[in-house]
Length: 223
Image (cartoon, rainbow, N blue to C red; front, side, top):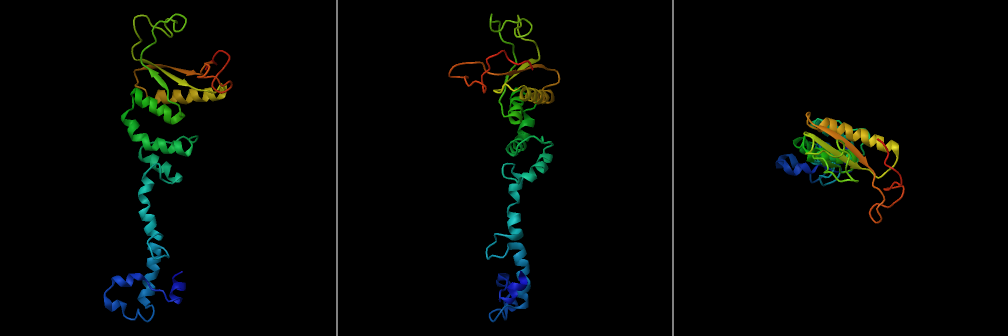
């Protein structure tokens, strides 16, 4: 590359920044120093006249490697290591980026309802509902004493996680249940207990009424 430029009469523009004595002879053709500096100029700035290539471009692009939404995909595993994360192999690229970007913020929320909701949302793409008190007694709706109703108040240190999933596919439901269960077990305070419920919306005209997608004409599947 530099040899071709030397034969075509090109010289490094870096000569302009040197004392005049080093520029002597440059007007009549490229000097040895001009050709010599040209090789380093092309390594640092590429073959053009503007610094848009070579090492200069690499250095100017370094900051984006530290921004999860802009970093090259192959760089995400390294970024995850900075915040003590192990990215799941079944994550798509955007979910990996979101998880790395929110990791430090989620560490501050660990053990809270908001933190658990966010963790489940990023992992599954579904925002769960987390209730820290039991439903009141409603005959015909919530009336299983000891299961869905507690007379005299809710159980201490107990919460319920509800995830609404639209698919009736048992395999998908089992996988979702196992994923959410693993997240809750890892993130909840050690002294707490919980119940995990997967719900599939029932038929409600104008709300949930797409048969086979978000409505089942049968009792809910047992998880």
